Image 1: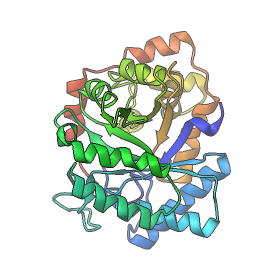
Image 2: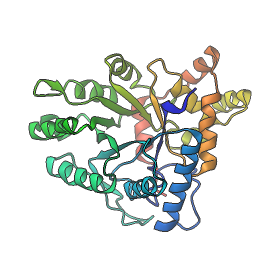
Image 3: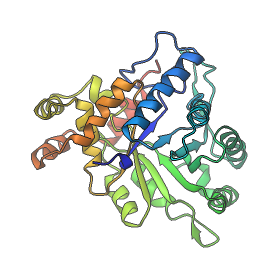
Image 4: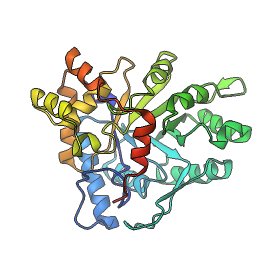
Length: 309
């Protein structure tokens, strides 16, 4: 399977703390060490053929790290997506009471888009509303909707990401939004994994309508590796791969052909994730994995209690 359906996300590398289980990080998580770790993963991903990198304003210094890497390496063939809507407030501390604050307003969009352009000038292909939910004020803010739509005129694709048990509702509602008679959004990035596949039908509809579909949290924030259920481990053993490769292969095997956003924190983890491109799941494998699905409300309740570390 070609690497054009793989993206590398920097949520776990752009800041010292995140909710992913099993991260493989430097012993010291100061800015220089995390920058070096980020560049190592990006170098390994590029060497493997990956040409998409996903960042966000709230991923600490992810945009800064990526911008520096692009400048130093001189790569012009890397597609970059970023997100606005959350602000990183963790002050580079592991023990911060709050790591990020959400605000879907026109002033926040203008502020963060300017910051993103400064750090990634000329590189951003896709700019996304970060974690759009059914109660977001964006849905009732015509000025913000028009401002987002205006990015298209500058050659920037406009998208949104989703979280929570009502992802499917958000996907369908967001794609109905228009500005000057034209759709606002061209892409969506949603959580989909073998524990939480509830957004699948809505994502399939989006793909059929010509929208770009990306899938995040392919490993359920590391749970599908650190807490891999026995059926997943059994399938992994049969394929001579790790549980992460099987979980990612399950994403890549969806008929709606999403791009899988991986979140490795080291080249070793990246290589293990990319083994998914060599896995061909059988119908029996897919049936067994389908039985791992959890109630969406229970899944998201569990996720909300994962600690930042």
